[in-house]
Length: 191
Ligand SMILES: [Zn+2]
Image (cartoon, rainbow, N blue to C red; front, side):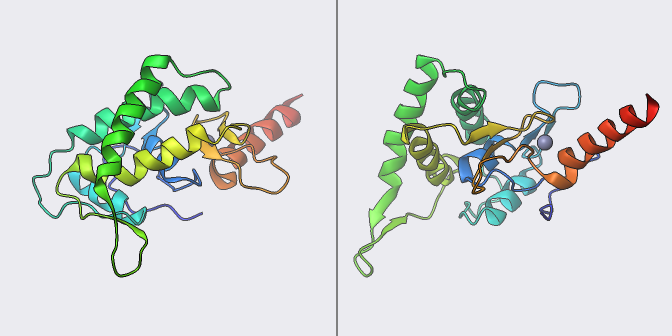
């Protein structure tokens, strides 16, 4: 899997779209959450623009788009999706927040008279740009079975296991998977 080109700043790592779903890739824009190495990929505004482009989503044209809504929604989505991936239950308040945000997000969707398909209105704010991500999260949460919503045991990124056998373990075999392999090899050759 190829990393997408985001400015890493001081951080020595890469960002990849590994989640298999929009809402998970969005939550994964924080690397190593809750650790000393924690890194926020959406902090330089240019990165936010690039992330949306890589995810195939429209983003407001204005250079001074206020990004606060991105951070707040990401926090809210993390508080719903991370517990689900860790086989816990999200707090009722977090689900209520998601529900409220999704109700608003629906307003950004219209039926295109030409194609009779749902389309998104072009976003004028970061809040509006988030609409497809919120709806994706709502679909995932209400899908019933969350067995395939997992987290990487190394870096805690979230992913939807779409493999046939359902045995996917790592965010990315080339990163966390091979790091683990190297560690196991090291321990084996030491003993
Ligand atoms: Zn990982």
